[in-house]
Image (cartoon, rainbow, N blue to C red):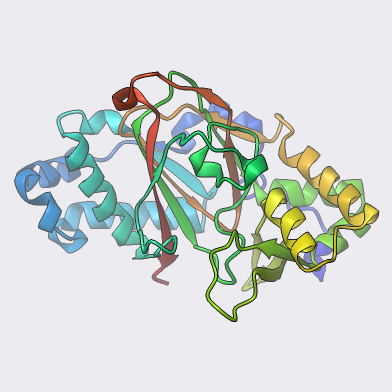
Length: 309
């Protein structure tokens, strides 16, 4: 496979921390005309669909092509342009924009398409889901335990944390380059399949794990799925704990992913939205300290999207 032997030099694909210095390459403001469209239907957003907003729809589809398909893989919509809308208004706008990208996945056995991300006092070490904790550092792609992972992920910030909770974005192509430079044999192992723990969300007579590679290349696109805890636990579930060689390679992968030289950091503010390609963006956050008052706690909303294309 050619990609296993050659470094990717396209800066749109294999970018590094220096992208931090060029926020105009990922931070977007909705146009005045799109905002006007939304304001005119401010009282009816709950019953509105994306095709009720032709200017907004055209703008979002251009962003999808320019950033999620062809560009650096992610963008952030500046929430300051939505300051005249209520929290409930903004949630509906987030829904409307998200559906422009494609079909919204049900994310859990509760049949939720919109999942709240807030600290519920849980921990990854005791089986908690990442979005239920205030822990940071677990860089991953979303839902790696699904056979068909979401194509895009959307996050809406309703309230940021008191301190921390800064979003991190890493290019899969950059990490692929780093592992190839380090040792091509490591990369070959990452193209082999691993068991991912489904975290008890599976039906009767269904496998408790998904068996898929971390890296794969298909349709001329590099794709990546990863959450270290899910692999560690998945391998144990099938009585095949990671070997010393596998652990060593995953440790090297984690080291590359967490290298500050490769990640873009952005502290999402109220009403900011971020959308990213879940096949080629690894994301995470820093740990955070929250407010004591429940109505001030960090509060995000997440969607998983199946691309229409």
